[in-house]
Image (cartoon, rainbow over all chains, first blue to last red; front, side, top):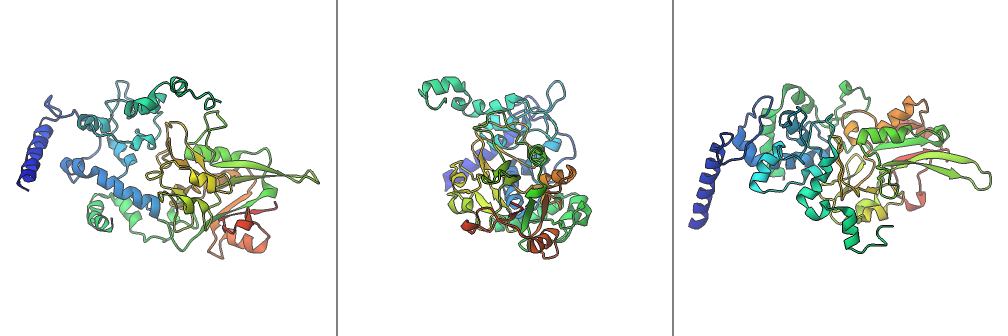
Length: 158
Length: 246
């Protein structure tokens, strides 16, 4: 019990140290600037609970058809669309993507963008976004032809 | 989850903008005329059962308006590989062998009352909403494709390849099964499915969308007035999609 408390304390200290360094060339991830108004709950709340908010709301939307949800991936990208040098919002395949700025840092893999678009609606997502598989699952992202050859799948290829 | 839901309400209400709050405060099932539909709703309503009536005699053999509208709306345009491309809606041609008469009709998910796809799904990803729309919760779909084998209408497709440029309202991705959603995102806004709208715009008017439980709805009145059939009536699935003149 005491050990776990100590552990929790350490993690909290570490976390605060990390967030304190945010954007200042410190230890934390560099988080892209957002547009729009700040979350009224505060960034700490969003960092801790964003996944729960979306998880709850996704079920309400899918099963009950209530689409006026506050937390949605589409909603995130209204403000959190990190842009490249040409001013085009980048996809999750780009390491500058808003979600990746933290998720890469903490080595947490998200598969949201296998199905959901990672840019605001209307932005053309390049084919590189589909190469996302290579990023997360190296085997899947490999040259399919080589993979088929490796598996000796003469029948599979036909 | 219910506990979490209660806890979340105040937070979300606190966050919600004025406009969306006004929308939310309409109780589920209350008609939202502002969206331009006569049978609009704010959420899935157990008091409704959405259905389609397709008149094959009005369906032009060379017209694909419903298919292209569905592709544009839901973003599933094929990549040119007929073996693996998904197909939410397809045109089927029936030929009477003795007379040679051909009938053209669109076939999509029939939104059965007793859907075999839901029966066989091992994870519960395949489900029927309380308003009768049969959907796949892709968050828990494992891509086993049992539902595709169970469906007598060949209505479901497996996504074989990585997808980009999905519509925000229609997420879809590799390794999951998908099918016609009856444009559930539009229905929830009180609009009609894209195929029905396109068929009307093309001047055919072969498709009618509406609430099968409301005896006053256009679809119910037509079903009551003229003969219609379900596909594979022998299976007793009571589909929400009905056909005339086939």
